[in-house]
Length: 237
Image (tube, rainbow, N blue to C red; front, side, top):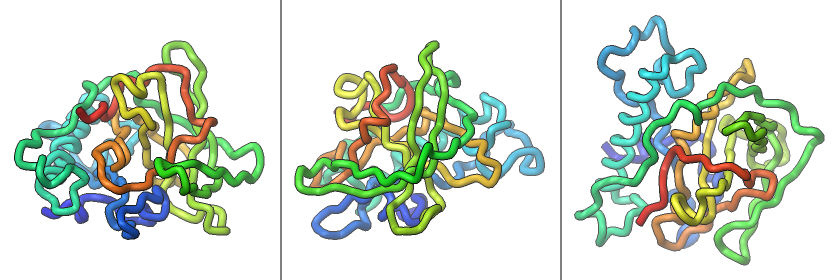
């Protein structure tokens, strides 16, 4: 199955703003489709189709779903013609590097309103390129006793709630050693009840982490964490 069928296409190109050779179809996208139902998981009547997005999903079900999601992404990165893995390296590609699943990095968090309507301009991995976003809200959570705060973004299209997805670029103290130096991303589907699963086990690298001619948004200063987030994708090579 082609990875473009596995990856979300809902305004994500505009959201992440990564460009290669003038074409944005290869933007750094996570695998966000529902993984196959884990063996022994509760029936569909007791859980949503995707436990990764369910605040009430049992931890053991979520852990199996994360593993399934990673396996699906690894297959796509190896087989898809649009993979960010360089073509001459795909034959020997055996998968991305990940931290083991750790439930302590999975939070149910409320999306708080922005202090004021705010346009945030971010730098990108290209020195002559920037991206404009709107603050969609703020998440607060605690890691190892440290209070943390992340701003969720949507594209600055002149309309509030311009996209269904929330884009959360962040950088933590593992950047440059265990994880990609420029930072990593989270992407969340909007919810009506404002109770979100903020799961860093699903944190992913921008396509720029794999080389190529991409332009990827950098986390704004507001999203630089002073703690280590040892969850999600690790540094490639």
